[in-house]
Length: 72
Image (tube, rainbow, N blue to C red; front, side):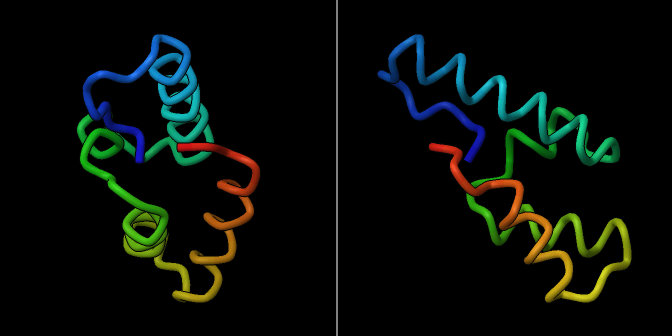
């Protein structure tokens, strides 16, 4: 999700870095390691759910709202 695939354009890398910073600002408990190991929206939602103690549907909805319009 936030990780680098290799061979990506500088614009893509900059966009992903921006998303990574936004996610860490939105959810301050996320470490740099956390965001580099998250590969998809569901993994992010699971981490948000586990760390905040939210119900699954609430965490899924929160993460989905945040990811709308973003191109990972």
